Image 1 (cartoon, helix red, strand yellow):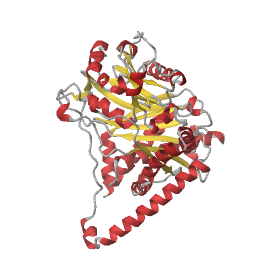
Image 2 (cartoon, rainbow, N blue to C red; image 1 turned 180 degrees about the vertical axis):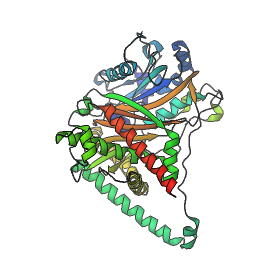
Image 3 (spheres, one colour; image 1 turned 135 degrees about the vertical axis):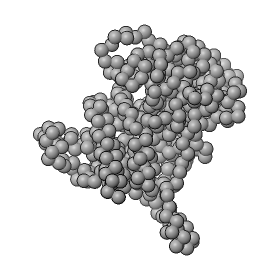
Image 4 (cartoon, helix red, strand yellow; image 1 turned 60 degrees about the horizontal axis):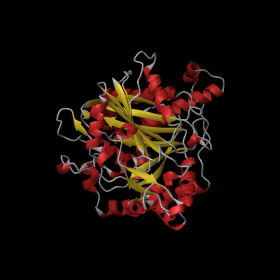
Length: 490
């Protein structure tokens, strides 16, 4: 138990972070790392001592309210870290029949037990087992009070180095604007676009705020076969992933003059439409072959939305000063926390004759969402709610908002080159999480020449997550082929 002196000098949890201590919103973040070599656990432990452990969040325990000591605020209390308590290296049978399935089962089992509050809220599992896409697997688990996905990814990448240059940090992609027709830009007076943009921003923000409030109060998504029901946040989750070519994603992006995010949302819309059509077809007594052949079984007017966390930090990327990376205190300067707003992204669930219509539709929707302060409003709304009505009201509002939508969606831009973690080169990088009121979470993470799709599902709702991955991958191929065909006809 912490002394009064330790408690009074400890760091308080931010109001936003306290939301994740609620039993309704007890969230965890998982990072799955495939390595190209077997893992040397001792080297990893030594690396952690020089990096993550230097950050206070990874060397502090969370002390909650203690009535006997009149302690009414949870705080981070520094403590010595015994790495043996945090780095788990199970002794595995190398002759396991299905290593991929074993790893899925192993990670799923991790969701059945909480992290121990008497220790810092993180752990790393090292699985020296060859799978179909790696020689070994590392699985980080963090409690969401430690930080949000963006800040934790930033800190994790700060521990890695480029394989080709062991002293260099990974390079992350920078945002690029879409191409603009110079002739069209030159032909219109400058003040007209400015006025139009301001009016559009005001209108879009008003609509997003209205829909956000309506979602908390009464607006719910259609009860589709992938929609989680009450209590889904507490069920055991299953995690699966698959990688597609990042080069092909960029090919579609360039051909359609969109962003990578537009492409991924279009692929997701197509994949979900395909998957749901199969399920509704089966409910009508049609098998897979017949469903593909006979067409559309989707009900009309499906409302299906993704809830997307938006990083509101002014600076993006790896938040460790590059000039101090060699110094011991560099990791400790990385800022963690939960600084995010949310936006609702509607998916048009339908079967399109032209696969490229999914990309066009996604681009149109995302363009409108970008020209809105809706996500900032949700952040400020939660902040105001926490200050005025307290954590209980803020949790209730966030839970209503999340449980009224269908999917938790995110896309993270990872390193452009091959990297290694303490000398272990990465084969892939996947991120996911659980504890939110969703039966389906879809996370995309780019790394080197791959884009990894990670699904977190409630197997009681989605018993065949690999089929959903198949549909996402097949939709991606159809869109890529349509782009290539379009190029040939030009």
